[in-house]
Length: 323
Image (cartoon, rainbow, N blue to C red; front, top):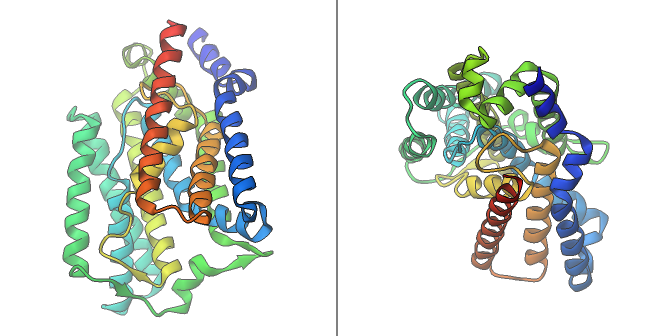
């Protein structure tokens, strides 16, 4: 009971505010600086586009958050997005499969990848980086095999509507992201599943001694990740009307950036959905601002790498002070 109270306390509003104060200040400062240089940042149209363009990252970041809360990682997210997208496009275009069936099969692809990752990591003790690196390679290879190295076009209105519909002037992709963020928040804060994730990430041995099925709850987040990433692959393909062979390339970098910048500890056990949202917004504002200022996309990767490094350094310093 004491351990549970400790976890609940660590996720209280006061602790959340203290841990994410730097992110809040960083987001405000970044927005002001870019807004002065590129006033279009704060236009209504641009803000909606910013949210839309970062909605897929928000969904993937929900999955990445769970993995990092366990003290692990999932670098197969981008390849899962690509494989699911190419599978859905191929089934509809090459095999004439109904949209509903194609979507279901693509989601099952994500489930299979999640199960492989989860079982390898939790039951066979394969380090998360190695296990997800392997599935990343498998996913990328299968994506190339299925697509033949070229884009697969999809001309199907029912499929396109999955991502291209607007509700009250707001893209349905933004609504999907909000739903995933809400589901993730509920799972982590209102269920035993979330309590177990924080407990395992905080102290795996203590979690085992308390009777938690550590292997099962270590594996389940990877299944959630597979489903989330497969859904993103479907969304991205429906939005573009095609699935490129390199779809999802680099998506893991954006997700890791958002989660770490949002105050989640790489050693596990500490992190929130709210903090991750801040991280997503920081990455989104930075990327959008650099685009508005005409900065080369290669330099954007440099900026992201620097920000990730700084966020991890801050986390290490913070943990050393706490200890």
